[in-house]
Length: 368
Ligand code: G6P
Image (cartoon, rainbow, N blue to C red):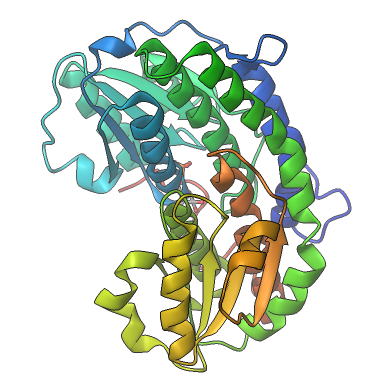
């Protein structure tokens, strides 16, 4: 097949902008909008009531989709979840019980460590579900159940649209689990599905912040280090933001759980250090605000990514506030992924790096 950049300078830019559409396609495959129910495209060969534990395994960006999903599965379905990078999971001989659920997430479906982890889980008698973008891939062929993301071909080495589509599939699966286990009522399910249906439009609205982010990128490009903070489901988005920036701009960045700030990274904060805070106005917002106060007190430059309500309530001076649309659902990470992708992208463009083919990185790591 032939994929071109359309009118974009890089595949990564095109793929970032495709997200309202491809996340929308993925949504349409996993929910029935008319009845406001989750409707998985395949019948699961197990009952969520028999699942005592879920393990989620992946590499890179896909592993951060797994970290977000942990919060959703635990909250909606009250089932304990463990998340691991595949290179650790495969060698630590993790005990899996027969009938437990092991979920694997991979854009390419060919990542060597993820594939080895899948084979290990199968040997242990776990049910295996693969969330993959390439339906003909080895992981798709070998998993018991395949849940496909409909991101379309992703060419940029740094994953963007595959990530948000993975989140969409995992969100639907977590709601399905909650429903099956009786933790969610029909009304709860309908409300959550309404939240998911809003996502493509909210992603499009988040993309509107691009000119502001492009301007901010000129300052970020002058930094030696950047810290990303978030709590709850925004914590994995902080990790993803830092990973993206490192990968394509080569600026050192770290993602941290905001509450861990005082256990280490606070020592690094001075007036040269930008701190990107991912903080939708959610149940942990106030806690994150107090961490921002700690950053501000040490002269750190805060870049706050929030919504209108958060911007109003944050009692801290930020250098820049990026205001995303208000959203009442638990699915904020699918939308808050967008500004961190854009910030990494535009910083890399300012730095003049090879955005689609960053040095030393491969799109799919098929060797250990
Ligand atoms: C490489 C890519 C990343 C990707 C990771 C996992 O490191 O550069 O963008 O997240 O592999 O790839 P997968 O295909 O398994 O999702």
